[in-house]
Length: 227
Image 1 (cartoon, rainbow, N blue to C red):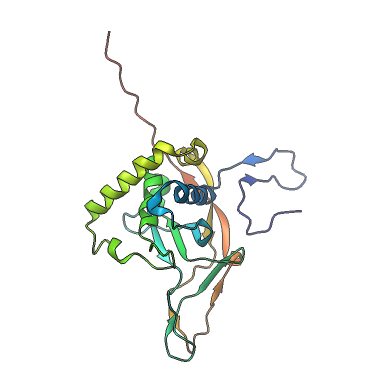
Image 2: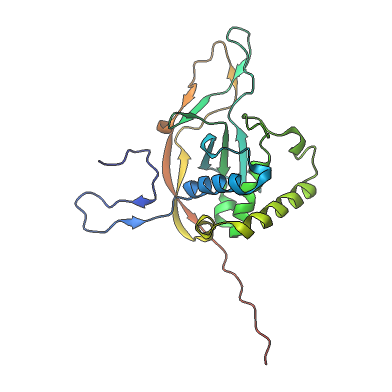
């Protein structure tokens, strides 16, 4: 059975009848999902995170950001007919998505492995402890100074890297062409509940797997003192 057009697996298959063997190619958005699941199991401060409710995609640049997290759900949408606003519903494999993490070009092109993992922790820490599709009010940068927030993330990162399985961490040291899930049609913001004629539901049909070049800086070798 051939994979669907929206499949985003770890292996790129050669064309039918082509003699070339299958070429393994890292699926970086899947690697991030596995990281999110493992972090939730090992970092108590992020134990409320549910990876099945997080969608990871690659996206366009946004100032100097490496990644962003966006709530994909209103906590209490107003009842139909009350003139409120709604957000498009995102479902992947039948599951309602509560948060979308977008990996920006700087994450791929100008980050160390530690920075990539730290960025994911940074974004997850913004999510509400209820993990209900909202952000934690006390962890917004407008309320919590960035320097203090970053110190907290550094401590979480150090603790996590001390116990993280090598197979979870290894993909973030990759260089070269990788696969990443992307929007074919990206959901907009909220819309008025009455009179809106645009798309209200987004699924795998609005996603596809594209190719991105990942560049990881080489570690500098420390010079040994002459004996």
